[in-house]
Amino acid sequence: MQFRFRYILYFTFMIIVSCKKPYNPRAISASGSYLVVEGVINSGSDSTIIKLSRTVNLSSNVTLNPVSGAVLTVESDQNSIYPLTETANGTYASSGLNLDNTQRYHLRIKTSDGKIFLSDFEAVNITPPIDSVGFMVQANGINIYVNTHDPSNNTKYYRWDYQETWQFHAQYESIYITDGTSIVPRTQAQMIYSCFSSDKSSNIILGSSAKLKQNVIYQNPITQVTSTSEKIETKYSILVNQYALTGDAYNFWVNLKKNTEQLGSIFDAQPSNINGNIHCITNPSEPVVGYISVSTVQKKRIFILNAQLPSGWSPAYPSQCELDSELYARKIPNDPIPVNEVALNLIPIGSSTIPVAAIYFDSYFVIGFTGSDDECVDCKIRGTQTQPAFWK
Image 1 (cartoon, one colour):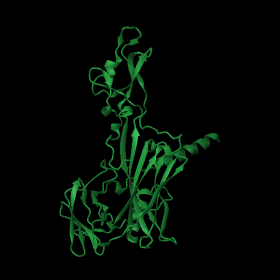
Image 2 (cartoon, rainbow, N blue to C red):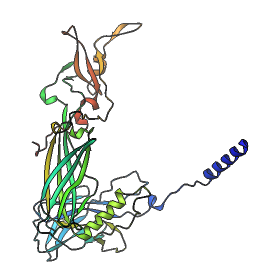
Image 3 (tube, helix red, strand yellow):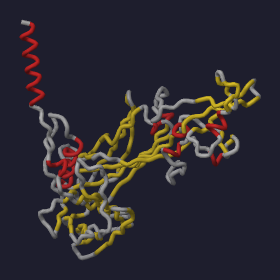
Image 4 (cartoon, helix red, strand yellow):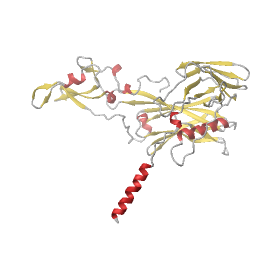
């Protein structure tokens, strides 16, 4: 009986294995490469920035595919034209357009291969001010949120994005440096302990008051920062940008969010077509990804100090760091000649090991230095020492 059970189990296993077939959907290696348009026509005094790229296959090693050499113009329904200039590969910008809010506007794109793309004419949306940006301390980090309302009751749909900036430090503070001949104290200008870094939002953040009795957005989530993040070990700042949307624009962003951020489990929504308001005039059947809105932009920045957060929180550094002792004369078993580890590992220019602090004998004689890998000591590897103009 036991033998029979093992035979049945083995037979069932072989059937399961033999039924497996590799699945390579066409989307992984599709031949199409479609234009992606990102940005907002800013009708106020801030810059208008539009980014052009093309889709890439899932099987491709390329993740960014910017479109350069295009000609972009913002046009009104009264034939006013505002050109954009390519400021970086695939990025096109113009200083404050200060558009007439009584007119409607669209974006015209002519790519280097002669194709023309047009967005639909859109009226100017006046974005209400941000009431406040705040944060709540949770057990595992902080949740950052935004509050806003529209007393005129014109705006019911919102989108937000943000830029983060934070001050952080290396795991170890080096007070010594090599000059190629010996180890000398660092000057203030040579310190590499404290730096700044920044990042931009990559997720889609939406909110709506359409189904609410009052046109109020209260504590809409913006982002989370974990308690072990370097972002909040010293000082953190976030600049939140708020955009008013039409109903059609809101639906576009909702569908895009579902297709890009809410797929993967059996309970998630099925992928669907993402219909924007941009069309290829030279080839109407060619898909285009994007939605160009026209609106003013409201901004608000806050700073969060480490002193405002629980004292028990500490950062998890991205590298496994240790301090090693590098001696001028380390005795090696069975070798009568001591090894000068300082000369070998710390003094050469370009060494990946950086001296941190002196090692003393009897509190007077320096017999060597502690040292660690450069990524554990030099904050410039992951940031910049240039303080942002807005920092305070």
